[in-house]
Image (cartoon, rainbow, N blue to C red; front, side, top):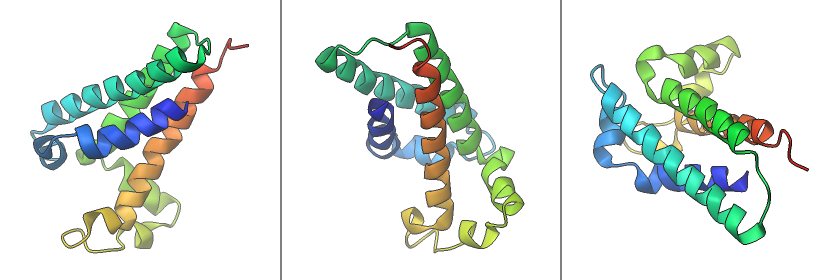
Length: 137
């Protein structure tokens, strides 16, 4: 599922528009977040399809789409910060200090929150890969 991982990195940093990135966390930003996640999943699936075309690896379409759906829902839940999933999880595992590390204005991509957000997304790509591998010989 390297395609999902690469697709995520490309989509989260290159495909996502400035408006999606800045507005998805706002109270009325649900549509921006939804558009971001849709573009994100199509990018990921595009990379997965490219690997399929090049290698000929056989994937079950249903498990691939099930995993992609779960991944998309978890990405949306994390990016819609009004739910507070990641800060609550950081507090639960005693990582609040790391979550709050760094200057969100000077270096937003160098913060603990950013790293924990990205690791959350990568974890769900891993879950997607596990689900997608069901039935693959």
